[in-house]
Image (cartoon, rainbow, N blue to C red; front, side):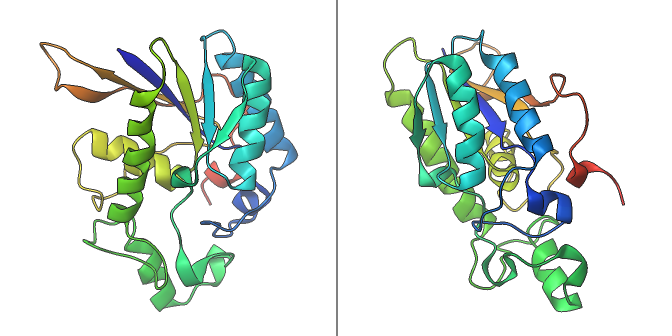
Length: 215
């Protein structure tokens, strides 16, 4: 059985400011750095052998902190990038027009093939995330990889492993520096292949990130 740990990056400046990031980038806040060190402390005893991250700055920095604690190098994989949010990238959430908000909501409300102009669909996102996950099957026997990615991206991956459509209503919350785990296994009582062991664990964090607070 292959166990793969999934970590969302730490809080960023734009998370806290409620700006749309997508594949644009924003640095970790002081809280985000703290979260990264806390998740590193949590996973350093798990026998992680590979740390593989999206090539965006916020995931790369989170991965570097984790890899240092685990004694690993970081491998970058652009397939682990966040959803491309097209023309809405870098825009403050509170300044979207009614039409722009409809584009954004189409990504999370069950709209089939919803997408922001010049951006990706959830199906396209899920496809490349599964490609990145399946690449872990080619690692040497005994490997225990950890992937560092993004909220929408990891949500699409975990939800589709559970059998949901990529465009299903988004109902899985994966907070900054949460840990999930998926296993590739054969079982008499579960479907063969990838299964979800845990999702969104934040018991190692001491306070919520600013973007998680209800407003």
